[in-house]
Image 1 (cartoon, helix red, strand yellow):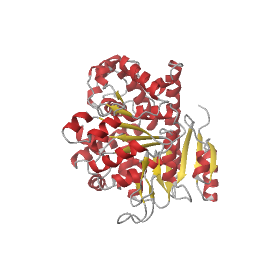
Image 2 (cartoon, rainbow, N blue to C red):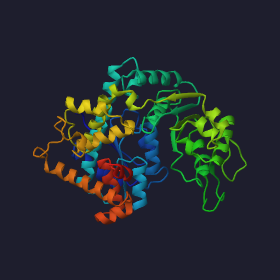
Image 3 (cartoon, rainbow, N blue to C red):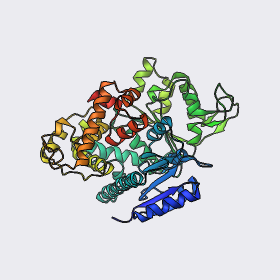
Image 4 (spheres, rainbow, N blue to C red):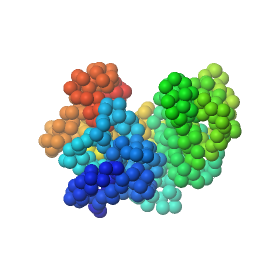
Length: 451
């Protein structure tokens, strides 16, 4: 493999130089920058790079840099380092997509191992993109929307037709069918690719905060509004605004959103000044919005405004021929994340995978691939993959420890109803440590309850 590239960001020149020398001695190719904006100039989609950044810096901080990197390429690993760590900050880092979160003074051995795993993950991402694009050199969409079933080929074709149009799009599909993947593809391969891709999960924002989140506010607009905040709609101007789970949006916010879509103008909360915005809306829902509107659960006029073009994303049960390809892809990504080699897949396992209905769709398949790698999925234990030897004789000590740790965490989450604080206390670790280990093993509170 070629030299692993790391972009290192810290406003402290001495710290920056010390880490640069340390990483170069370990064989990394290091580009050191003292600001987030300077680091961004080194990045681009498909760049073979890992970003390591301090959190607290003048101007754009580490979280601002993380958001900017995610807009460029959501699969560039970002490792955040800070000497001011606390549990909420760690949780925020993981939720916003950081690869890892390390407290200063960072343990060199741990940080180097983290970067190596992140580099291998990134190498695999680039390799998979290249292989998929090479298989269909005339169709760049094949590298983004994976599959060769008729349903996926048809979806790619319609996405390609819409990419350069500024038409708003409604994506309809079951949970886990890849609606955000399709939205990102529309943005990245369309004429708005140089703008921001701003994603908003309407179901995850408290009703009292959603208007401020979308439209922004002026200082003093409400209790606790100490300074001006730019909303997601304004932040997405020039790019794409992705509204996920739009069926969860409160009625009051729907009224304001309808006006913004019709006029492409907004007002921040607490302001009378109109601001023009140049956005493309891609909304996603797992619910029939027209039926929801008839029952009074959604504004009918907003349904008509959003429903200019609707794309239906097929569930896995309607594209079974894509399941082996997707499973192998997720298995390889999981293996890179934990620093292991992906095992070969046997015919028996592939047949079992294809027969299942996968109600959680692609997301469920990805979780199954990660559990299979760790030897924790009972459905696949007897399959001839070589990944789950019944006696564990061929596993290394590190692998056995990882399996035991993942099982212990999963069992504890289940015992305590998925509650992070109580689970962390029961295991004798911090909430931050628990979040990081859950991320490593692909666990979630909800997943633990469902297993």
